[in-house]
Image (tube, rainbow over all chains, first blue to last red; front, side):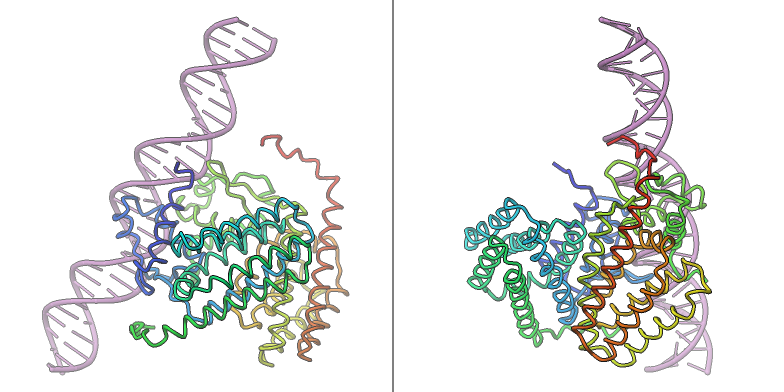
Length: 226
Length: 226
DNA sequence: GAAGCAAATTTGGTATACCAAAAATCCTTG
DNA sequence: CAAGGATTTTTGGTATACCAAATTTGCTTC
């Protein structure tokens, strides 16, 4: 059952805690405390922290405790900008190279998300949504592209989760997914690229709205230190 | 003096050994041996290996020694494909957002490379060339873009070093750099993007030539294991 | 009472020892 | 002599103990 390595298990656990808000932004992630709490030693927990740092969920600081990152809107926007370029490339390559079966597997993810949208909770839907984007990146047949895309997707977890749980843009998301799938099936690279771009532009708008909406209640003084 | 952390120092040391061929592709990187050789313990060496793995210089395998990666042409081509997308994006964003001073600093790198091309050895020239590309990515004003680009650049170190030391494409490289700088100065995004794309297309051709040329002498049986 | 310095505590960095899994080798058997 | 299995060895994974740097707190002094 535990096919994944111990550091990855720990990272998954901590990631959920961070996304769910158990560990709010700014919290120090202390090796000793969390290691003791989870009943493991510091070594694997150390590696788990590196994994989360690579994903951008925690920030490493020299000679200081890593802290849970609090991404600014600019950082999230930067992420989405890069992701857009990668997904647009993915869409084109998928049209050019992917097998029909691969495109159908993308379609299946979209269908599953449409079916389950109302019966699952936001975090689960959210994971399916991520796997839709991941599927497109994978179908492009470029492992490097898939890997880089995956790492950016990981960084967006928190921001997307937060904005998704606020604003339910159910119809638009499902419609856009369907349009992307249609363009891929038709091997229409131009349309597919445009649809992907539009989809991510909407994501950016959603995220912007979210940041706008929390700007006020965000009075938790972000410690004047540094 | 030792401002960088111990794992980074070790990673730098190992990286040079790998690039210079002291550790040829396929070599197992054993924690114990290298730790003993460098007079450090396994813990920081372990982290150093993770750093190199992130850069793609070594491959991690579950329950096996990490080995020095021997990138296939396909992998290098995949890398360049993604890098192209990122640098094209960089070129556009740089035209749109960068300050004149930032563009001039890119120009300075190109000038320095042109000046020193004949007086430095290939590895140094090569590092300047990398910093030219890095400068464009930085000038785009998107830290995420710069970081992802940097990591891809790191992966290409070995392949580019090898191909660069074989084929001296001095004139074309310098001319293309100049054309890119000119387009950036003119804030001509379309031209800049096209030039960057062309530059990387040529890189791909060079790398392809290199792989073609070593294909024969590559008879070192890559251990039939696995 | 405030400011500065020193000591103690907290925290990440490093070394080392132990464990489990996998690979290789050697012995045994057909 | 070959093939298969068991044992030994190699190797990465994990736990723990120690160290050094940094922060914080409390005492002393002005």
